[in-house]
Length: 275
Image 1: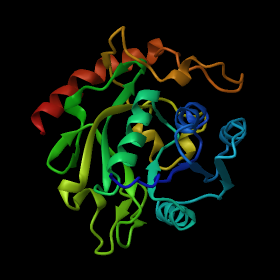
Image 2: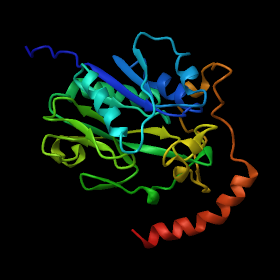
Image 3: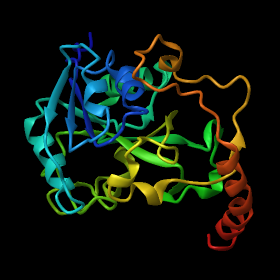
Image 4: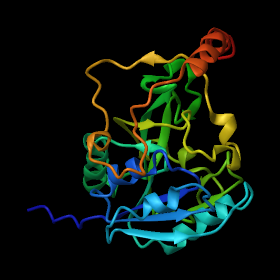
């Protein structure tokens, strides 16, 4: 008879600043699947903290960490690592929203294969304009283990020797004891899971977006590909939400659409020329 596998503990890390539009959806899309989630605020001046505190759960460990710069961003990530007492780390930003199927598949995979793998990579569906449109696959530039596209590393085995966070915001990542990025370790231990999460990084995320380093550069004015009518959106989009939480269903405005219509052909041409 095979020995019973010990349940692996999974903690989430959510480091935020001015994420009032999406953070409620992000946290509530994963909270029931993780053992604990560290939610640290780094100087929000909008309603982010107020919204975070609306989710009453013993799983949430909130901390008002204080402001960080691009250079000290990784220090906050490192302090989160030091406080984490788990087998696996799950990364969840304030603009990343999961379906129940997606997050449950990651958790199930970690429980089944977590002793034999070091990280889990998934696809991202990047909203552009609004939640009814997404960015074409040709725009995906992330390269992990020989694959290129809209990929992101979202779960890490905490037993990796010397695991630590480093580099400034925008380049920040996780590294091993030899300063090797986790996504560049043994490709046989990097699991590409056929699930996706919805990413609102290119949409407005706060009324105070302009205060966050690099945030305005991320805003995309682009005519995206329409999502199919049968798209399975995150279940949290349909839940009753506090009045302070913005609706996810706001469509792109006419001015933004006009600007996107002008810019999109040039962006698509550039992607195909500069591969």
